[in-house]
Length: 118
Image (cartoon, rainbow, N blue to C red; front, side, top):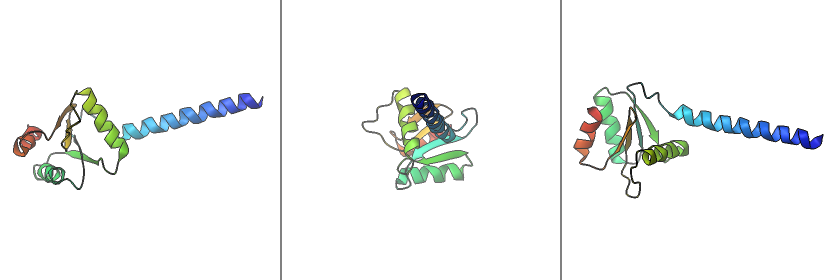
């Protein structure tokens, strides 16, 4: 009887933790049907800071995740880059998710900003 109770408690804990983890990851994601752009970057990256300023000045709705401080956001970003088949060996931030289209700061910065605006 003790082993059945232990197994039941184990499964409840496992599935509860798994559900909590999935919920936390989903809380990061912004509804892709919205016009909100997701920006993955760092508060210590001048390109990231300049991108946030650009978006604010142009009244473009965005959600910023600091990948230095938020490991779940970092994992989400890496997953999206992998799905988009973007090589991360020479990754330049910020990384943008614009309605499911993923791109990085791997071109001239002004062109990068204009790509966000389009």
